[in-house]
Length: 325
Length: 214
Image (cartoon, rainbow over all chains, first blue to last red; front, top):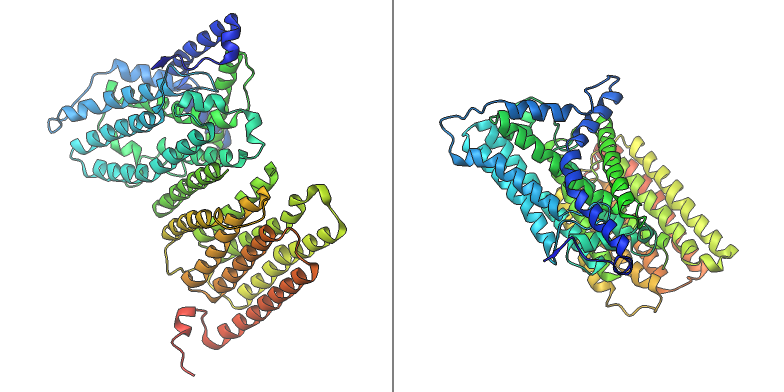
């Protein structure tokens, strides 16, 4: 296992750049941990702007988290340890996925060949425990939400894994850090670039679906019949709910970094600047998500599976293009 | 092979997938027109370094017919026959998309094994052309409305056109114009036929037509 990711030849040749690279890549994790709740704040603010409202402050998610963490927890007597494990496991899975995710081409904390599989299944494990906790309550509504969550993730997982496979084939590497290190804005506009744009499109769909954003699920809805993610966490309160919200913000960051890593054209060779543009890219993505949520309606449930199947088709197409090139 | 040629081939493939997944007839007509326009541009992009008047003329005629005249004729048939705008497939949209992915795999598998000319453009174009042909055939058999059969026929023609492009670097002008004229007549006649069928039988259900006795 290589800690801090692979070293580029340039980094070895210039020791002062090496230190800048390692500083930037070690700053990346704290930056993500601190700034992740900013993303839902930005999304809400953009949606408020489109609706002609002032909206909540951008820092509101932090205040919500603080408030929730100070509360006490109430547990139903019908629930078991599974219910209590749900939020903890989903947060730790999101944090582990974050450690594997490179931001804007900067090496992630952990990188080893094959970590793309670990990445996909760490996310799946977190989801499994959220679903198990929802089922543990015995509520009919939560069972319904769990069923939908599992159905949609069954469809979005192929899109994610096949897209990662296409990227891995393109780079000839098997770890997220080295795959994203190979990507370059200049790579997008030569032969093979269209395949990468297809992967980015598929990841964008997965990003919206996995984070329960609008064409798939409305994070603001409080009507049980239409909720997916929100309904699964209805019975969690206090610190548990805070952990869930924080885990959701981290997941937003992790999947967003996969999209912006391909699309945002910023590899300056100066790690600290790259870190900054990476953060800027994430904020732009959050703003774009806010725009999508403002101009689109939720899809009918029957259409959701079609859109996810189309995303999987994009990934397969990209994989075929990359392997035939 | 350059970026634009690559992107164009990807867009042709995506247009096919869109036709497989779209539920509205007018969306299908527009997508097929878009695909026709892309394929009209293809010879220009493939021979950017050796452009001549003949090539531009051929591309212009083909683009004009496929992107303007055919959608207009089909849209007219759609309005005059007073059709409902849904496609009404025998095979569901998600299943159609899955079938499309299978076709794509098969087309790539066959495409890389064909003995074509050595140019790299041809190697990338042949699978896309085969895929377009498969999708055209599939649309013809899997949709209920008679208008979809015409669309399937147009997609099939697009595929054959692209295949010809991959196979022979430059097709003779006369052959190309002859094919375009044939397709034009076919769409024209089919448009009229659809109008008359819908006046006669109050529906355009190809499935129920097969039970007619003479």
